[in-house]
Image 1 (tube, helix red, strand yellow):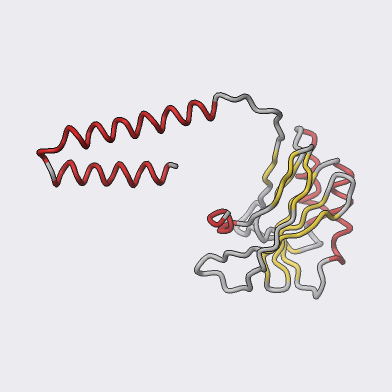
Image 2 (spheres, rainbow, N blue to C red):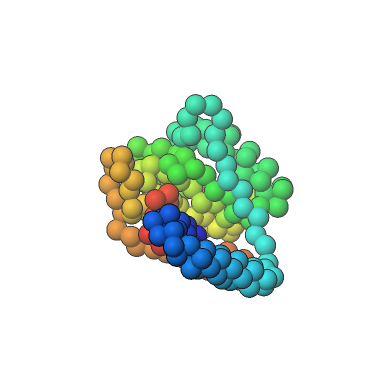
Length: 188
């Protein structure tokens, strides 16, 4: 909606400059467009939320936004998740490729994340660079691995492989939830 509004208003401004004799028509059209946009936003935002879910996003200190698994996961990450859970978070999210795993299979390190999720009774959305793919793994508060998603829409400078676009969803406190990574949100 915002992109449509901006492009349309820019077109009207160009027409006001290019056709000075028809300024009133273009100003009127711009005013009506802005009024409709504001009214629609007020109507859409007038409904009250059904519930709230507190989400914590965790990053790493220092120059790098990646930490190698498992050395730092049990100290840095576990303590940050514990703090987020104590502050009421229901889901804790790491950065895209927040962890780097150079092994041939993913499941060997799931145990620690399962334990962290269960101990803190939270969902974990873990960004992992593994097997030349950017992946997100979801772990439930019961300690179970719920599924994974692989980044599908790479940015122009990404040099790794893209996923197949296969989505999965899970229930987060009764809300159907899914995952997307970075540029994927431009292709919802």
